[in-house]
Structure formats: structure tokens, C-alpha cells
Image (cartoon, rainbow, N blue to C red):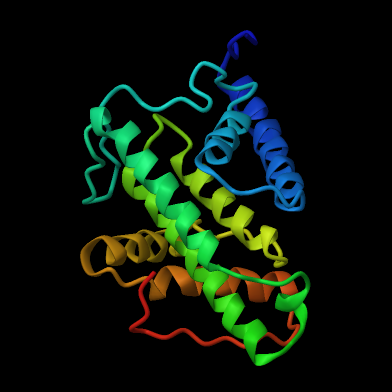
Length: 215
């Protein structure tokens, strides 16, 4: 096991290196053609803390947590393992239903745009599910965002950076709360589409979000 950081500066440096490594892990796995499972989600969290906090990487929390500035109260820690197993099964079921031929999503056909919608909605679903269960003592947001990217890249889209700094943070938190309260994924989906549009830098991409659609 790696030695613990000696101070806050070293911790931040290690965290920066870890997030780069975790991003590379996601990109490599997304392009491997292997199935996306709960084990891989845990692997992402482990990569995020490989050097900074190896003692917590890929391990469920064993304490209750309050999220600063949020009304959401994560489930009791004793429920986390079961909830994550359910999440893993639901994830596999959703991906089984997403039938996508190789290269189809880049074809520019009407079906391709329908597939993009489906992929983005599943990315939003996995993102919200992780932040709702809050399975880890730290790194839940980072794991959620990288897991969403894993879905996007696995199906041939570009990974994105969800902007949650400054004025965007409040809107981001509200988008998650809207799912908690109303089951409405539209605001979070918009965050993902905005990230995609920025990554594609103006390349034409049909953007339509059915307000009534639920994942």
C-alpha cells in the first residue's frame, strides 16, 4: 500500500495525477469492447484514489454522510452494498437493450440520432444513480462523471467535462435534485449534451430532448 500524503499540497498533487490515470482507465476500457459492469465502476473509484487514498479506493463507505448544501440524504451505509448490486443489475439490463451496430452511431442517420439520445440518457441515469446512493466516503461525483463518460465513449461518442464550477454548480445540483423529486432527467441530460456540443466544437449534432422521457 502506498504511503499516505504528508500534507494537503501533496494530497492535491496525488489527486490530480489519480484523476488523469482514472480518465485514461475509462478511455482504454471504453474502447476495449468489454462489458460495463459494477466491477468496472468500482475500478474507476479505485483508480481515482490509487495514490491519494488507496485505503478507500473501490471500497464502500462504512459511515453515514451528509452532503453539504444538499437536501438529499444518502441511504444508510448498511444499505449501500445491496443498492449497488441492484444498480449493477439495472445497468446491465439497460445496456442489453441498447443494441447498436459498430459505427452506427456515427452514421448520421435518423437511427443514429435516436441512439445518441439513448446513450446520453443512460449516461445521465448512471450519473444520478451514483450520486443518489453515494456509495463512497469520497469521490462520488468524480466517479459518477467518469462513469457517465465510460458510457459515452463505449458507444463511440467523446468523453466530456461536466462544468460544475461557480454559477454552474447550483444548476448542476438542481438537476440532480429534480431527478430525486420528480424523476425528470431533462436538466441533467442538457448538461451532458452541452458538454458534447462543446467537445464536438460546432460539428452538427441533432439535439432533441423529450421532456416527458424517463430513463
